[in-house]
Image (cartoon, rainbow, N blue to C red; front, top):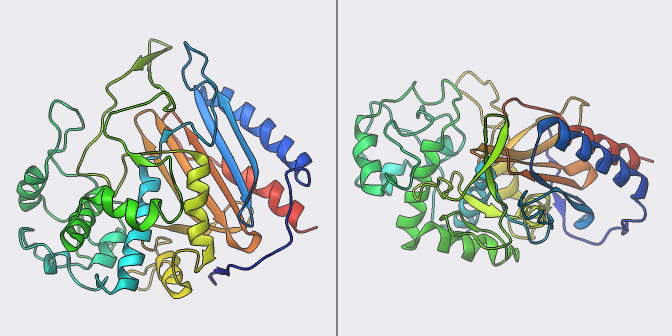
Amino acid sequence: MKLFILLLFPFAVFSQTNFQKINEKTRELAIKYLKKEDIPAMSICVSYNDSIVFSEGFGFADLEKRTEVIPSKTKFEIASITKMITAVVLGKMHEEGTINWNHSPHFYLDSLSKKPYDFTIKQVAGHIAGLIRNPSEEDWTKENNYSKKEFYRVFQKDDLLFKPLTKFSYSNYGYVILSFVIEKIKNKNIYEVQKELVFDPLQMKNTFINDGNYDENTVSFYKDINNRKVKFTDYVYNDTSYSSGCHLSTSEDIIKLGNAFLFANLLLKQETLIELIKSQKLIDGTKTNYGIGIISGKDQFGNFYFGHGGNAISARSEVKIYPSSKLIIVMLANKSKVDEDDFLEKIAKHYIEFLKH
């Protein structure tokens, strides 16, 4: 699949007025989706050619207070979209010459115990290193927060699932290792590195690690108990997982992150973006449809996209980038997703068809 990485130069500008009819279709789809999925709060943002053409909130950020969802301000848990942030960090460090994707994590981490098979940074980032999904003793509660010391101890006893490069198996475990590598090289904590290399340059002013401290612009989190929504304030988080998940952000900030992948030289060079986005391959040549922190493929309508989704307790998130249409769609919500759905693909279809005419 040929990748379309765009150079940053002026195009004709479309305003929200141009997209008025398409935006109405998006609004109708969103209202139906919110009701069908019984979601308390949702934020949707659509960007064309680096200009936001649709940005609206649905439901209530707090059901009791009936707090409005404001896409530029209301923060949601973005879950595994965080892996796109890690991809940018790895891309910037690759361009700086401070990290070699083909080195083993053991090259940087003396304390990381050896396994029967070694693996590279790139293989870890592409989920083909053979690592299990999560550390075996990980406990996502504040009472037993999983420390870095515990991680190294548990990694020593956790076995690989398979020989690297022979299978694809999604692993948050691997992204924890990547965060330790990044911190070791930079001699800073992962959030400081993310802020320096990603958030500040892209002006993502409303993106933070989820450390359990919430302001008035953070959605409330709910559990479904006995067919009713019960708010809980102690949202689970894990301070070893800030490369795999555990971030708060807004839909408009995630649009900025998407643009960093859509437009070459906005933050990363074209050759770096291609390396991040293009599918990795197994030893038998099978494509995984996963690059470095990026999923790619064709949607049900045959349109090529790349991006990432996320799912966590009281959180679902997704960003889809359609490079040939210069289109980015982001959805954040505060209810976990049980099954995969084609909600964003249906939204994208209307905009893509409109832009073709």
